[in-house]
Image (cartoon, rainbow, N blue to C red; front, side, top):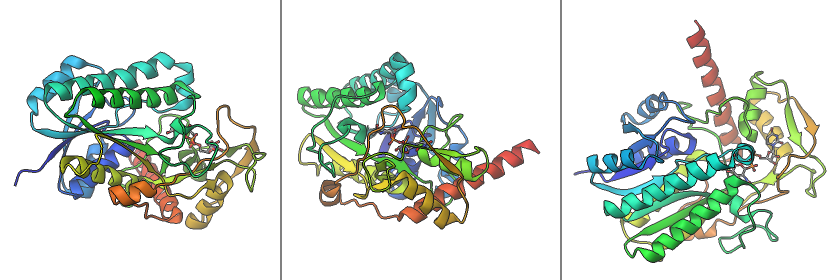
Length: 348
Ligand code: UD1
């Protein structure tokens, strides 16, 4: 039987690559588009090592309408698109806002236009808990009010949600699922794929693993004077493989027409808030490796705390975060060790 083809834009990226693996495991045929602006072609080997399958890959920039058009002409039988192709560094977006608006919005508009042209009805979008800002009540549900964005990155996520909601209203066949991720961390348990931060990491987990590995001298904990039990910020850290599996459920829901509305929104988190200091302690316990750290001033734009109510995803998507924090942190560490091996092998 022919496998159902799913386009994964940004499929060599962090969350994209883990999703490609889970799509293959679930019997789909993912096709990857990526311009490799923030990922590496070697990721394809990692995917093959895990699944035994080398997915079709096309080096295309989703901002380039003409190349995308040619792509859809070449692969006319795509049943759904999962769109990961976007820039995601909050700080960089403040320095280079136009880059963010161009990358994140133009790519989305091109994809939606071409899905109309090629009669593809189903779209899954990578959104973020950043749309909630510092919510007045926790945990946040999908009905928690959206706060004004605090960065161009956050603006692009809010605008993308609006673009999709307006498109679904205008185009009767189009169906869309918006997935609002909390803080994705960890790596595939095989350590064949994981996060590949460019240069000095902005996000907490890659900084923790690089510090533990001796690449960075010490982690800076941005603030211990927040109004939280230990004074450090609280987030909802979600295992990347668990997160990837939610995309398979979303695709299935759309392809099998089990969606209840033409646009649906789901929070993807664990429902548990964990502080920065707890992350360090749990990492040390799970791996037995010390993480030198110091308390530093608060980081601009950080909110105090956020965690998800994911009960809608539990009941409607049939999805639940399953992996423990310890296991997730250990997977991040094993991936860091794999990167070290690769660096050493390359320098020989
Ligand atoms: C932010 C966005 C999220 C986005 C992600 C992508 C919000 C609320 N969240 O996540 O939507 O998808 O960036 O990059 O806007 N920390 C340290 N030291 C470090 C690094 C981080 O203490 O060296 C702390 C931060 O202050 C924060 C926590 O660790 O409290 C997590 O930070 P990070 O991993 O950067 O993610 P967010 O800022 O939560």
